[in-house]
Image (cartoon, rainbow, N blue to C red; front, side):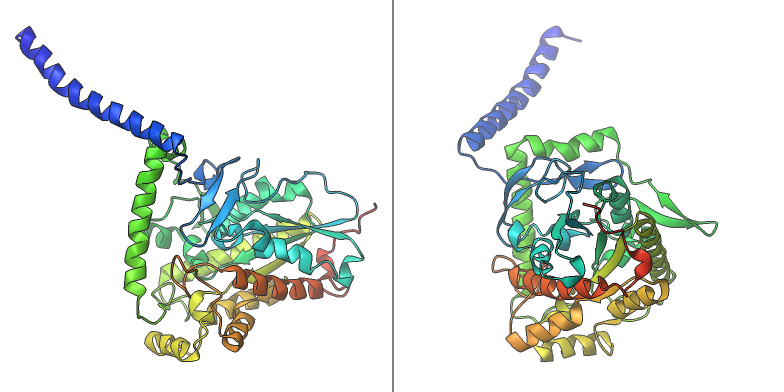
Length: 404
């Protein structure tokens, strides 16, 4: 092969590639000098698929507007000592994006407000309340169980509160239903093998895909690209929602607004039931109380009664609380308290004529709780937990009073 031809070919390739590299480096430098950043808070986790990146901080404006700081353990919370201070009643909260609550300021989240609302609870005997937030967006019950074992129990909680979101937690607990949602982050799930519930960890990524997943944490250019993609998706959602009634989440009634009919949905309910009971038993074995709360889904608490009724007619259902009642029945069957939030939040939203989900920069009435949603939820949870702390309430869960 002619050497000069090879040299020209190399130059043809090297020159444009070099130009692209130089352009990207210049863009990266300019973005850093101008302090332009759209931080991504998620990172790969070999045990749970995804986690929050320890030490990451920055503004989150995709829905709501809040400054986030991820603590050294990888949760959206303040730092906490592992050893529980004397005279303190500790609550560990497990959940998904509603619990992480990156849409609002940390002081406005239901977990922070819960600590304040419980301060006057007689069942605490004057102890100070400390609430630890272990919520991470996209988590299902399997990942929350792993989080309980890996981190939450190390902090010796007196009570573990599992925040269950019926809108997607059933799907997240099913391998088949999760795989059907191709956009979802791969995650560990529990599956039945020969009648036994076992952890399936086939989600684990190759080293190459992990590197790609992590690269956005080190490049302002990639942050901008990711933010542009996100903004495009939001614009489509806002345009689609304009002038329309609220859409049910998810689009199907099966398993959430009505009894499961398919094998996949029946399996999702069965796995959820077994995971809740497994978590219950492990919490009780640690000496703590276990409480479940079912969070509201947007259609349940839309302030317009006629709009809610229209959803029920469209889905062919009698009411919007099938899943909440199902989880409450599991609590009665296995002996743990379940605090329903959806029905009391619906009454509050209707009486006050307010949206509890949604933000001005996204879609009102859709998505996650806003500040009003968190405040009302914390009030209901505080009353429910204080009731559960009565001496005659679930004594088998009781932890010995602090000796200090």
